[in-house]
Image (cartoon, rainbow, N blue to C red; front, side):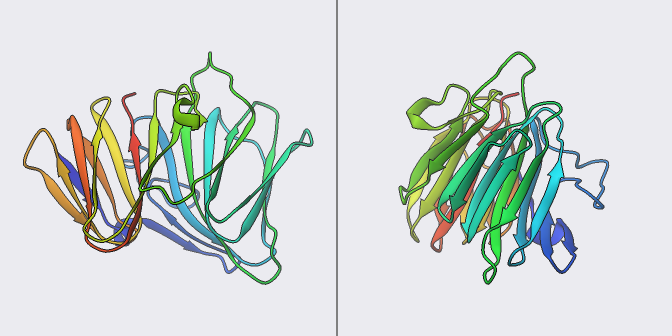
Length: 234
């Protein structure tokens, strides 16, 4: 089964300094039937105004993946660690109890646009506290995985995250590790076809799709496409 969740159905916020779209319940947006999907707790796209910041706060035990689409961001923790990432890069924060984290748009003239994912972290796993990766322009890239395979970011959970960058007419086939996955179009149109059924969905910019009980997925771009496939066995 592939079931779409359109960008229009998502929660939204506009605070002036922050504009956001929320796939799942977050902040003021609450839907008891959309508290996350498997170990994926949060999937937000947010735009921070020039010079804007999220002030320090603590988090539950999650891995926070930030993918910068436009601008330059800095992430700091209360113990003095920090990382800067530009458009085309991603950072992974392995949050810890009693440590607070902040986010800053480093530009005083340009907005910061990024995707943010929270993934539940296994209580027995510890990884580097801050990791960074350059995404590049490969048609498919393993962005994050449980064991850091293929030089990917290492998660504290059985999750595989693929970054997809296709031209119109190109396609990629993906094996799904377990019963669930989530496909998110960052921009562009995509046809998604399940490998275990005749299920398919067409997604446009900002749309997502719940994927259930499909052993594989074919992703075909009908326009230039950038997307994430989040493989969620747990």
